[in-house]
Image (cartoon, rainbow, N blue to C red; front, side, top):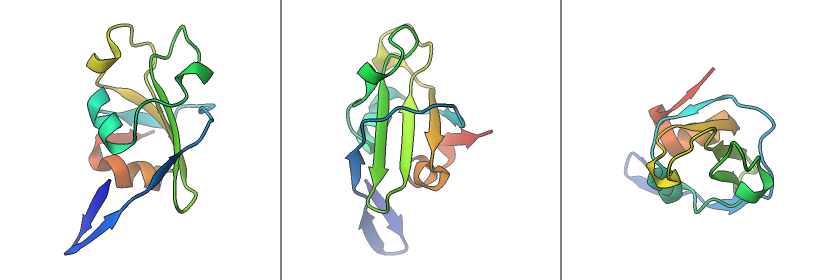
Amino acid sequence: MVIVSGTKLKKMKLSDIQEVSSGKDGNLKVNYNQVVEKVFEPNVTELDDPDKVGASWGFQDDKGRKAFVWSYKFYGEIEDCNTFSVSGDRSLLKDLFADKVVFY
């Protein structure tokens, strides 16, 4: 991901973590492909509840901030999902998704 701040470009490096969230802090209003573009392919779906979760991501940045994104009770083709649940470091999620993420 590239963040534009003034005229400087900063590359955000995200790495895989093999964890899932224990609770929901907000919603993300983007489609599946937008999540993949900002993060990477789902990496922890098999660790989540297979009856309720179609795709799940666990990741952290180079500062150690952790975040989680997952589809909850979406029963169509996962590529058609356009609302995801989120938790973790709010500043990381805001850096990645800006106003597309809303917290409770």
